[in-house]
Image (cartoon, rainbow, N blue to C red; front, side, top):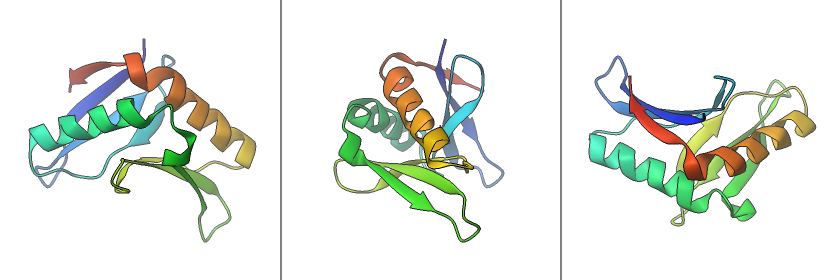
Length: 108
C-alpha cells in the first residue's frame, strides 16, 4: 500500500515523502517547522493530486526532468526525484494521482 512517511530531518524540521506500493519514493516535501504544517502539506497533496495544473514539469541544469506539485496558493508542497525522460516523469505524476488520495500516513 502507498504511504506518506512523516519524519524529522537533521535540522529538526518535519518532512514527508510519498512512497508507492513498491516502496519507491515518488516525491518529498520541504522542511516544516511544525508537525501540523507538515500534515497540512500532506492534505494539500491529496486534495490537489487530481488537478494536472498543479504539477509543474521542470528540467534541471543537467538535463534531467522532475516535477513539483503545488498547493492551491501556488506554493510547492512536493518535489519528485530526477528522471531520465519526460515519459518516466509522467509515470511519476500518474503515480501521485493514483496513490496520494488513499495513501496511509505513518511516522518514521
